[in-house]
Image (cartoon, rainbow, N blue to C red; front, side, top):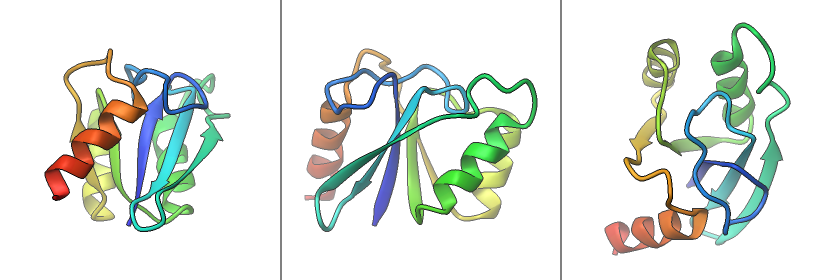
Length: 108
C-alpha cells in the first residue's frame, strides 16, 4: 500500500506541512517495499481548485492513505468518494520519520 505524507521539504527529516493542499512536498511511501519518493507540489501557489488537483496527482500515484495536519471540507468529500483514508496528525512538529514510526507501530 502507498501512503502520502504532506511535508515541508523533500526529505523524511522534514516536518509535516500545516495544510494538505498547500503542502510544499508529498512523500509517497510504499509500505511493502519501504521506498520513499518525493513529489513537489506545483499547485501550492494556485488560487483555486488546489485540493482537487493534488488529490488527482496523488491518486495517479495509487495512494490509499494521506497523512496531513489538516484537510479542507471539499478535499474530504473527494477523498471519501474515492475511498482514500485520511489521517489527521495533531502535531505539526512531527517529521516524516516520526509519522512512519507511528504507522509501523500501529500496523505491528
